[in-house]
Length: 248
Image 1: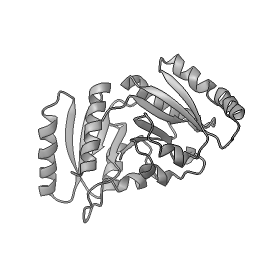
Image 2: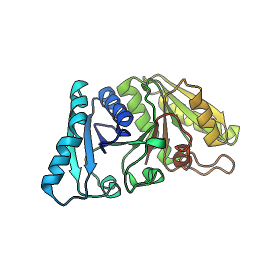
Image 3: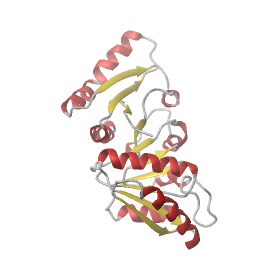
Image 4: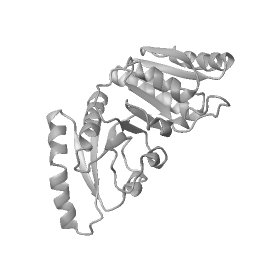
């Protein structure tokens, strides 16, 4: 899994600012391009063109200023329809928290309507300098691990693989599995076992401030006491104050 084009909603509102700054930062780090998208229910091609020119002027200016290739698109559909389209983009960015304001879309919809990984951006901006992955042994977590490794290699971000476990035996199994894979790579990585429950453990680790971005699968294995790492992804957005990358 690789990221070469990033999909960024452009609404023309103040809520775009922090989200688009994250999008440009990722694009620069990953040598990716940006696709700025606005939805319009207008049936008038002339009106749509006017919206294109006015709404995207700052978007194009800011991309040009930091050397990021970009294109723009006005879609005469709802956000739910647009996000379910299988276009050529590899990553979608969203604002969350108080700034989430995409019409006809609830924040809880994000983790299952997007066919691509979704970068959920908090209300404040921080440079991403290191990343962490929540791993639970599921196929979805393994796909997320593949993306995390690619990000680590491409952006030279140190990677921490976090395992929230029910018991020591389970933790050792996951640890052996992940370390056998990481040992074949040249990235800067570490594996860390955390005690459950999942949501509290991950929030606690991220709030320590040594890692700026958490990567999670949107579907994970169910655990009797700790819950599903993937199943926690959507609920964690309610309390997270850091960027969260959700991988379908």
